[in-house]
Amino acid sequence: MHLPRVQRLPCDHPGLEFGDEPAKLPSMRQCIAIFLLLLLMRGGGMVQAQPASGGVAVVRHQGRDFVKLATWAYANGYQVGWVKKDEWLGLRKDENQVTFRVDSREARVNGLQVWLLFPLTLIKGCAMISVIDTENTLQPFLKKPLKQPAKVTTICLDPGHGGKDPGHRSLGYNEKALTLLLALELGKQLRQAGYAVTFTRRTDAFVDLPDRPRMARKQGADLLISLHFNATESSRSLAQGCEVYCMTPAGAPSTNAQGEGADTGGYPGNRQNSVNLRTAYEMQKSLVRSLGVADRGLRRARFAVLRDATMPAVLIEAGFLSHPAEGRKILSASYRQKIAGGIVRAVRELGKS
Image 1 (spheres, rainbow, N blue to C red):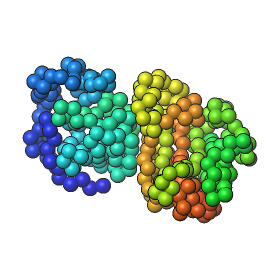
Image 2: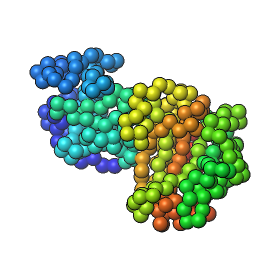
Image 3: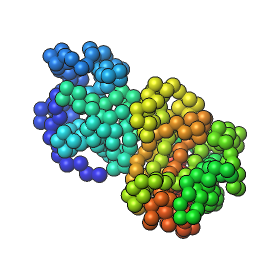
Image 4: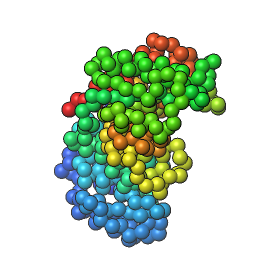
């Protein structure tokens, strides 16, 4: 993704644009001093800033910890500025490029949609990002070297639903049947690629949600992939594309939770937060590119299969059964082969150092 030259940020280094040399940026001490002075001058909505690790000041706002995006970016060696004034912000370093929509959780990491845990917010004219997002959304992507997953040799496939739980129904088919067909195809392709494969079910059987991650653990899986298809009752002709979920970090709401769950503590699935994020990112990227479908983004959830997993785990919504065109594609064996191929490519990418 190419980012255009940008306009300067409010409260930041005058005239800063992508392409400026790092030597032109103010020192960390100057950034913090200016930031604290602005806080004292403005007063109101924000409480006194406290120093965070690395010298970046943390601001408490409406019960949450935030840092100024530009200050965080300078401290980590990134260039930052407006891509579209008051609407989109950009951040760049080396090959990594991130854009943020103001007052939204929408972000793009190297062109792929990634949903933030809390909205990027303009507070008193300054662009602020939550501390939990710097730690759990930005750092796992931008920190060098990237944290690599442990070597993946055994993969547990979890076809969603089954037995008395049919899942979505569309075009005369139940989701449970299609997820099983996808899992069997994916298992075949993974074995051909040299991986050992296990399943939470290989027939039309009902498996309790808490049993699925337990089965993966007993089977010695290094990675758990839960397979699903989406559906909607409204906007059936509009909702399409794929999305991949990983476990929500402690203290944050899930992507679709409308703010609920922000006070939730940790679960076993949080032990692998960074690796879960990287795994979901590679899955989403590979599926979007392989299938040419709408990018609905990397998302967070506390689904039982993710919450209780002790190994890296993702849940894939590989398309919308309810969409007139995409739903018919999903019924096709050749299209399910393409979905499986995209997942295999992502697994291989995870194994690269």
